[in-house]
Image (tube, rainbow, N blue to C red; front, side):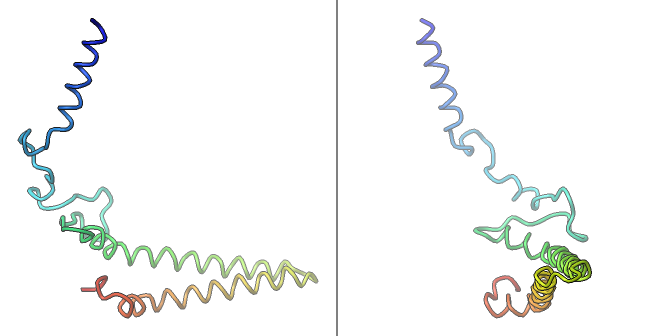
Length: 131
């Protein structure tokens, strides 16, 4: 008897969750009716992102967050230049540490240059990011 009741309750649970939302009277994308997705942490002065089809919503969010991401990456590059400088200063007579510090600084400066030209690179490779 208990086996039959548990099987029936399992079937009822599966049927409830398998029922399409439109049949249950719910809209599948409530954000479309409300005008977009509210952001928990605003990007600049934008607090809402409109829902678009395909990858449109993600690209919109990425475009809005791109400036913040570039600032964070620039800060990390400056930090690596400082670390490389400290490695050179603390290397004394060890040429291996000095070369490692120079390599850190060279790659950090290369990263800064790439970040400075990020807009040009993205426009060249894919015009979808900039409308």
